[in-house]
Image (tube, rainbow, N blue to C red; front, side, top):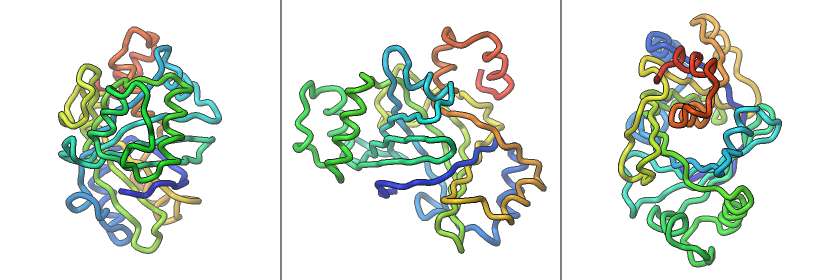
Length: 253
């Protein structure tokens, strides 16, 4: 989980549990469990950031050609002495670029909540230049911690193509009152618990065998943002009535 820079394309699908189970069976000749977690299963907990006027939300919601977001992420049952991952995720059209740095969670908290004038060189980060970019992004957008999003992930890697990865995210939760990620992956479901988000991550194009499997199982591609959907649940006053109706069909309300 320590890759610091990568570029890829992503396709998202909303699956039923039955589609998920069938997809596991039909992709088993090609895929293996991710080496992280237990048989590719682990929990993701992320602290997301936005400006007071929700600039990041509206850039994402309006699908600007270039948009970006910032998050602080931990895996499984991390504590303040564990490593945390600061990530800038940028999207241009369908191409995702991600820059990630690693630092102790305790130092990430110091930077975010206690250090009014941080000296970045004093932090034990994996990439000082990456940390400078994150700091610049924070200052430019006047970002503040917004909410915590967590979910259970099942990740698979292709045995023949190291650039192909698929993930299944379930039990998606969010909260805005307790912003300490080490307090655990709890919150209110913002997607129906019976729905699983599939993400297909590739460097170039989805292989034909996987496309055929997705088609045979009638998996419908769906553009959905965990960041936007969770924020719309937590701040329902900013969402039009017709969007609330759509969210209720997706689930979580």
